[in-house]
Length: 103
Length: 170
Image (cartoon, rainbow over all chains, first blue to last red):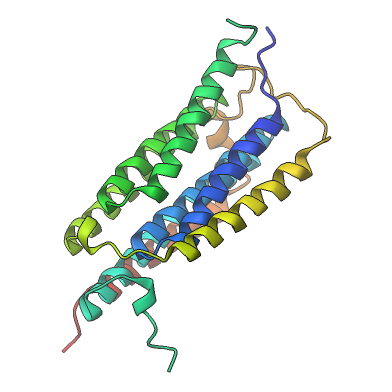
């Protein structure tokens, strides 16, 4: 039963998801939304890794995705802690207000 | 059905939903709505993993992303009491520039795909590498050392998050 999907469609889907995330990072000012867009970009890459791992019938790609998930969890925990500390100090998470290092 | 198999239909529907929810994350004014749309997008991506017969990753994806990480996001948003009124907005010029640069990036990526070989993925159910049994064997033999390092990383992140998040030490 031939019901395979071409790898090109997966590449296309991942590219579109990644670019939605990238545009979100550029177009939004809320730090939490920017964080969520980074998660979307990570997921686009994960999906591509899994599809290539299935294409080549090699489990390493899926193990790598597992590690990426662990690292993403650690990143989100530390990142949200930093954001909540920033909010406690300046009462905002607007990225344009985070310019203390400028002067 | 219209010359397409059920797998191809599922792929199309899941892709459409994932892209729609992804767009809603970016365009939604209310951060709480953004989080909920992102959860829906993650469920669609988990469906893609199931379609690729990567069952372990599909379950881990739902548990870790939709279950743990997004709840963390939701808690932080509620803690800061963010809503539509406090949402900072970029100028239209910046948004248009972001859209154009994203479109150009998509153009380059799609253009690089044109004319490449159409490799077909293994049919549904034929690929056995994504099952818990097979992936566990690889994870605990070939990748045992990185696996242990990942646990240390998570411990360090836990300690770091508490250290950063707590109030000033007297």
